[in-house]
Length: 323
Ligand SMILES: [Zn+2]
Image 1 (cartoon, protein in one colour):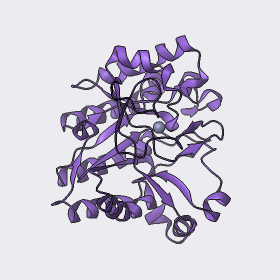
Image 2 (cartoon, rainbow, N blue to C red):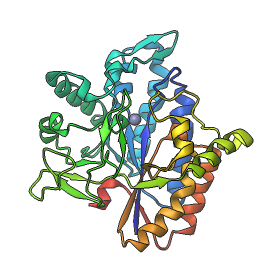
Image 3 (cartoon, rainbow, N blue to C red):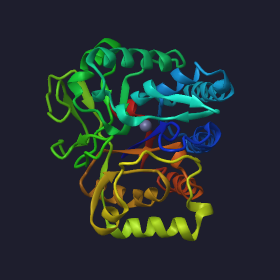
């Protein structure tokens, strides 16, 4: 079996963006150490909007330099870099060394067609110039990849052929999010063309969906309680505040929910269960999403242990190596 760990490398987009050091540099350094120990290859999705906008602020230059160096470092180590777009950077304000995010235009579908094309091209170039191999994987900011027809022409011209934004059964239509994957194929990969949820063997694109998982209310009770009982181990290393709209506590604590298989914080505790389930269903691979900003001491330790335990039966690969 193969597992692709994919990391969205970014600040927070809520009330407080957090520091580059704690949300990006420090946890990613830990992840790269873990990868090296286990000869694993990861896929990183650096937030291209950050790179573009930090360049315009002199006060952000020290941070930007660290980020650029880290991207180049993982590229030299052979990890894959994909394109990750949070277009709300177009509306960001920088004040007193803090990013003030306005998420009223959060997703590409909130922008005019001509703007979408320009954003994709500019964001792509910003990342591509830092790395040695051509970018061909994409992950939409906040999973908001629909409608894919808006992105299609730009992707064809840039050579982006793989998407990894969908997760089977996922749905969130609370602003600023808007995605609905309830009709996605329940499959570990499919070809598509204009509609990302419709399998099309003659399509130009490949979907490598993030593995999806059902989470019980009990899981979230544990998650919230552990954060209170043992914040040192369970508090995210990143020091910002997430975008609102991710789902209310009441809903999480009262019924089953479908989310991604995730390496973030306590979510990583479900990895063993997901592997068992995948073996039973004879799945050849899993795609796990994670965010350096949401890593905890607990999750980093678990990841390291998981990789040691499964080193003989699981290959830890980049998205490109799943094709
Ligand atoms: Zn993101």
